Image (tube, rainbow, N blue to C red; front, side, top):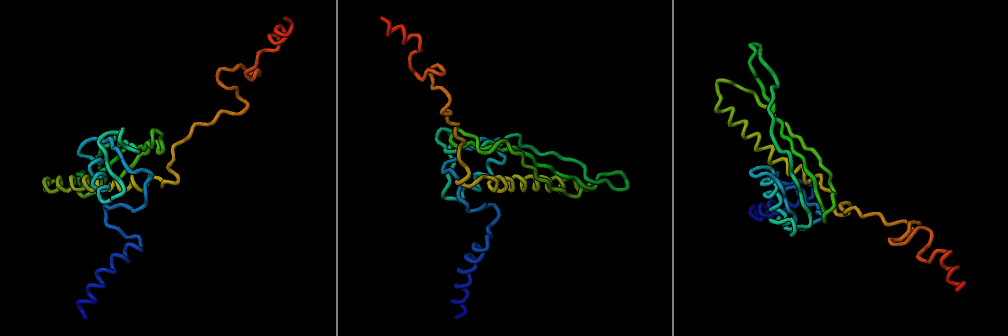
Length: 201
């Protein structure tokens, strides 16, 4: 009986967590996107790689290698990490640093911009010890990787759902505007003077 109860608990627990909206970090949300095939333009060994890993958990989205094969194009630009002093101890030495990750993303759907260039900024801080340079350098690189892993989830959360992610249509010409090739006020007919000359012949 205990084994049966344990098996049932293992099977039911993930369903309960999913119902509550819980998901593992990096797996993103299950909300549908407005596209099935996505092309990503990003610098190598950056957020683009983390995004590819994130989307690999989703069977409804596939990454393509050429933009002409994609329904949507995601551009990740101005990606970088800045480092600044956060605090100094009494001896005038740095005691804490702050890492600032920044990038800009924009999304095109069917050659129409649906997300204009949008900045994303993440921050991480860590204590610094000049007697442990190797350890602190490793901690810094770990925090940078953590921000690059976190950025795709934040980006996907900003993508609008299919109902709102529609290309902007060009405005239709007003019924009062003349059609191409026709002069204003004639509606495609001959001018009045030409019509009179023709009737006099």
